[in-house]
Image (cartoon, rainbow over all chains, first blue to last red):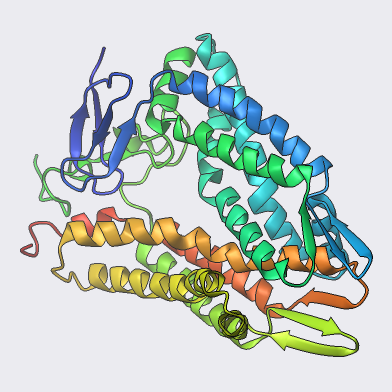
Length: 202
Length: 210
């Protein structure tokens, strides 16, 4: 058990952080910024949720997301096709932005968590640890999984009076993905991940 | 040996120690590179205020077309009806969908304006060394960081409506230029929030009485 000297990222107060027991959290005494929050078996749980999330994300891309029936016509929407159609209609930048925020960034983050957890849980070093962790934390603000879920709900309410909307397999998969993704990230402590990387590579 | 530092005594910067912005490891700033993750070390984000203001101004400029131009056009039986963000909210209120109208209004109108005001106030207060509570300003900063992404809601709604209603012959919905402008607003405000260094707020400790 060692104590670590660090500075609060938000107010730069120099302080010593004792190693946290599982389930403990530490905040900066001056500005209240959460420095570290250690979940019990955080990395194992994070890995489990990340694995589930990766399967659900693949399913979310493979099946119909929503389908709509109006005056005898049926329209089926899948996530990749929705983006491709937007791009074909000349809205390439918009399609790229949406795909990046709801599929690519969260997908890469899930991959990063798995590729970090596999070696770290066994106490091994791997050449990709540092780049994977850097990518993970760089992408964090750009993943908009939960915002998209709210967007879907709003759209459903907007269309509901026009036609019959059916929720597809992909819709439920994405919802499950959003939950697993959130839990995977909530169990991951940035400071702990970097300390583990240092321990395993040092 | 001890030189008078521009930073408060209890800050890491006063000891020439920089906390890595990627992995939080504390290292002497003269190393220039974090020994743990290889990121460049800085005592403070370089040109933080200038960068924040630049992104903020870009976002505010983009906010004009985002509101004036249509976010989507609904075409039905040869009649096409463009609708703006605010127009969409008004329509939802007329239809009686108050909760949805509230979500769109908060995400697309209130959140961006709140972000513009909060970040402008933070930059101004740091540049002018305004004696507002440091803690309150830090909370304001966290709030702007947290709410930023939620304004993407309406852009996602447009994408779903366009994709879903595309194939049904009678009704065609196409996205409008405002959707792209609005996406730009969200990205710019997020970059502005990331460029702002909240430690600048605390660097004024001792200079002004709190």
